[in-house]
Length: 239
Image 1 (cartoon, rainbow, N blue to C red):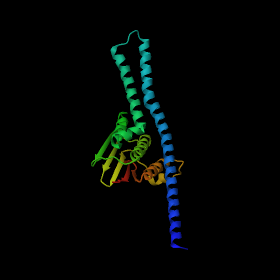
Image 2: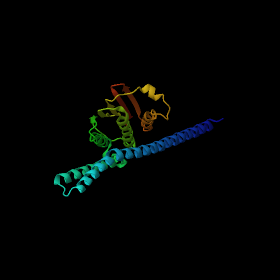
Image 3: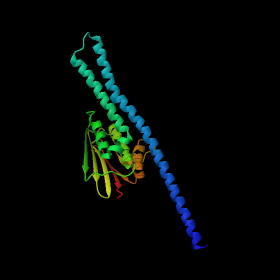
Image 4: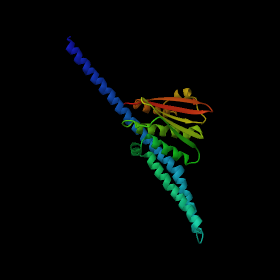
């Protein structure tokens, strides 16, 4: 068997392996997009029901009260207008939160700041965003994927953590970008949770780790019962 033949066969094998890896990567990206779309629809449903639906119900109740009265005072009209204004603001905030172009146009840091501001506006949580180092943009679709990952982390926090404070820290280093989401909630037993079947609640954390790995990063999680949870995402920076 000639050296040239062996070389050609190895080249062919390498191309096939690269093609298989690329196909697997594309399949994982597609699966991730489908999961994100499903979560986005669930997120919209929850926001419409819990926030906007409640505001519109209050506005309708106030308008019904005004109909029962012969005259409406300026204060009563202002109160209804305030509720409607708040509803419009909630709708605009929700649309920005779900718009991938918002992340593309304004960047990860501003998008996350907007997301935390929206959570803080519920008056149920205190939120904080901290930046360390000189901010820069990440290449390709990484910022959008990271934003969706953080949205999923925040959604899990709001649903399960019973936290009062949420802090997001962005660390910009020359060769590495780090993003940490930390809460002071009830925490959980991570080792116990990670051993559950994919059909149970542990699947959410596995999805977060897998999506981070899809863009070349890694995910580290620390959680202590009664103290809270910290999730750290790290990505190498391509110069």
